[in-house]
Image 1 (tube, rainbow, N blue to C red):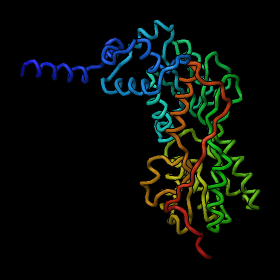
Image 2 (cartoon, rainbow, N blue to C red):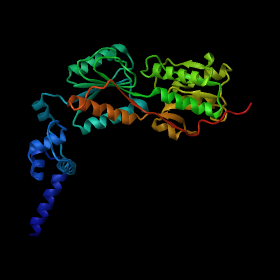
Image 3 (tube, rainbow, N blue to C red):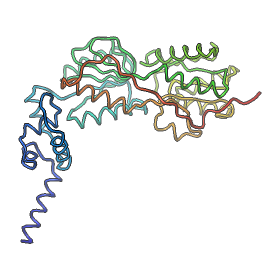
Image 4 (cartoon, rainbow, N blue to C red):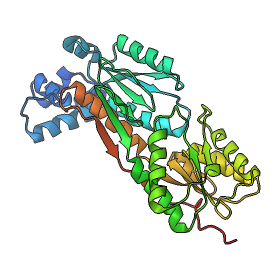
Length: 351
């Protein structure tokens, strides 16, 4: 009896350690394989009790169920593949969105390709068509200026694209601008310098127009000499460093700086420090995005948080739902920003 018990224990352990297939999961649960398939694939049109659904999902997780993607693709004549387009993967903004999207797709049983286009229009067009030609059922475009219609569903994260069959996942830029400018205004800042984002960045125009509208609403002057246009195609702190050099060496008086993103803010803070200015005692600095590094700077960076990973997860789940025909087309979905106050902003120093 002892030997038999040990053998049974070993078999159970092996079952948990090794991925199980649909047939084994069905035998374990005593259910029809088609019922399990409907639940795990979120197939519409079948009424299955919630208790049964929960039991199936718990067992699938417990037994490390792995779907046979090749068989499923052949059976449904689908590739279960998504194309993800992104400019670069070298900074927190893009990687956080990618992480959210990628985790969701993997959990849903999808494979994905990535294509990096460096904001080059020719590559955006070439890669988008190549991804579809290689079997991508849909495209997730992150900070990508897609300007042509596609034959597959497209979800654009950041930057509104007025193109057929494109769902836009965006931030409420008006609210973001209100949070940033009103924070500085309430602290007492009236001479504020601004970074205008690069022309090729998807969010630049919407974010800038929102800033202009909020400043006009507050009666806050925007001094032309304090508006710095970014144009370099880089995603490192070097983006913000020359901005403060230009402002300070040009003897342009300002007490606060609104940066286009956190990466530029990191470079700006270093530049101010190298020029003998303190943050926030001499100049307050506010960023945008709330990447992971923002909380670990000295001083900690006040910033506008975008729910980047959440936006990526939503884009991926919405794509899966669209492909499974369980969700209607939506042109735009807006996410709310949040002001994160840390140590890089303070009232201006009295003259």
